[in-house]
Image (tube, rainbow, N blue to C red; front, side, top):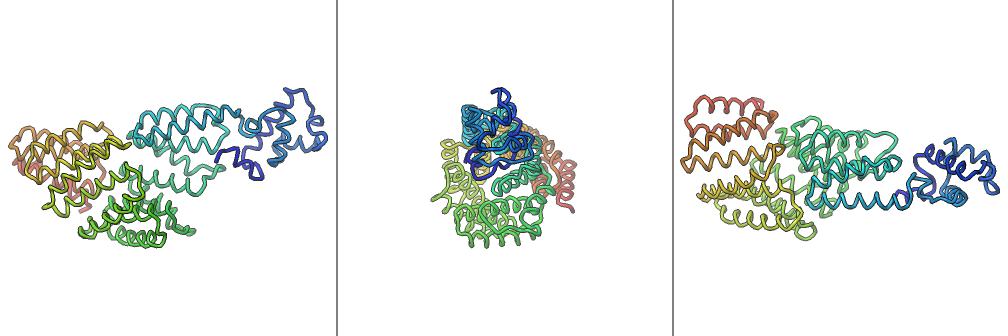
Length: 442
């Protein structure tokens, strides 16, 4: 719904001071006194109160004043003409389309231009849309600090309360950004404040998605007992709602918990359920991403099915190319395909795939680049190319040194230690094992 439509539902909701100032300015430009503008329908004292911001005019009064002042209602309410409003809304649609198509840098540029346009200053709803889109685009570009700053401002803004669904969407993105930056405390706090507070809302699709994001933070933090308990609660909520979106979100993330807690077959069953629902109701990019998650899980749980996993990865690669997937999704598929080739005994292909994935990533995708270097290093070891393998593992150590202590960091150091052990680098191996223990809090 447009901003103008919202203002027609009885009473003007915000910006009465600005509306009054615009009425006063236009009245003076027309050479009218307050009494002349008011007569005969209104009193001049009532017009005076409106202009001073002490009275909030109804939609009917605003329409009357706009007609008398010979200006558009859109301008009177928002300070922009109908044509300017159309341009702003069109600009938002183009920016959102660029973001949906994976053109994240272009989307960020478009949103930044909209936010730099002074016309948005008095349009709270459109400005919030632009800020939220800019934050998502910044996140996709790897600019997590910028995304967190904007999302925090949206979350904490006073006087411009977000609608409930938008408030949840902001919380989802903010928790996710904190988690990706390694700030697990804030990632958990954002989700728990909305989901587990004293005024806990009833479950709906938006809140299940927020719960799934919170569940991811528990997993990365290594709080697997809490994750397992909360996963069961999410699954129960999704079952109660019975909606495709809630089912996919709950099953997808509960599967990660199951796999992390040694219940691989249960994880596969949950992912298969999510995949079945997504196949019927989901859009192509998310379907490809979920199929990628299933293939990754299948390779971990049933490595004897590596050939089937390779076929799945190749299918996902094609689906991602045909959708609006980001380069990160494509790079992850290439790195996971390399892991399948290692299991199948073809380390040369593994080096090629992982190198292709690594080359798609810039410095901001640190975690995935780390994984790519690990895969390349292990594949080179199998090819007896020790010197090249050592160079890859040195890059792994360099990247891991900047990863905050967490379960993910511990797994990375442990994998690096096992690879360094094959290079007979005793000192580096021992140091890596110590870092793995420290990252796990041991």
